[in-house]
Amino acid sequence: METQKSLKTVFAGSIGLIALFALIGQFVLSALVSKLDRVDYIIHFFSYFTILSNIMVLLCCFFTVFCSKSRMGLFFTKPETMTAVTLYILIVGLIYNGILRFLSHPQGLLRLVDELLHVVTPLSFFFFWWLFLDKIEIRWSHIFYWLIFPLIYLFYTLWHGSFSGFYPYPFVDVAELGMDRVILNSFGVTLVFVIIGILLIGLGKWQNKRRSYLNKK
View 1 (cartoon, rainbow, N blue to C red):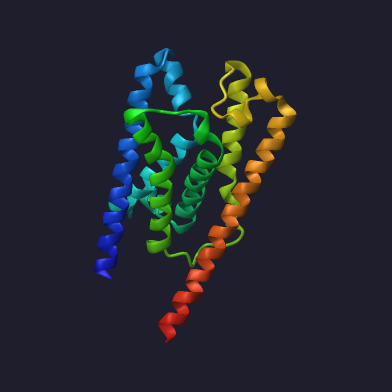
View 2: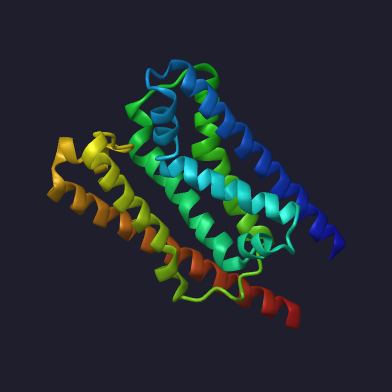
């Protein structure tokens, strides 16, 4: 048990350091080439679902290693919360590698932090979820709660874009695609959230049954 706990702490700490390095690296390196003023740059930076999801991963890892018994710690280490964050960061990886990867070609350190944000962190956090999270409390109904954050993000993106003209992802660019196409794209992305969420819940239930079976042998 102590060995498992130590491994969990080391794994979470390692993922947290990767996410922290990638977030700081992305912020600093992008700022060096950005032509936006300071306030607009900060707003744009934190308008990316990728950035917000990686921050959530960082918080989950931080509270797993430190202050897990605090009020915030209890929230960010709950199985429901960590599974929701796993869902969000997996969506980041899937959409980037399936749709967005070929739209830009970062070089040097920017390419490194890009891979950390979109590949290394999603895969690492999924393996952390798979190996160390107790999933017995996860319910099918949780998927509805997990959709709240992405929907709020979508509404914010459309609202902010309506007067700023800035849309962080091409599939929600109303100015380029029109509202009807963006709504259709958003429905498709929401469907992906639902499918991946269902898969995570199903995997968790299968893992719980398998562990129960092996413990009885």
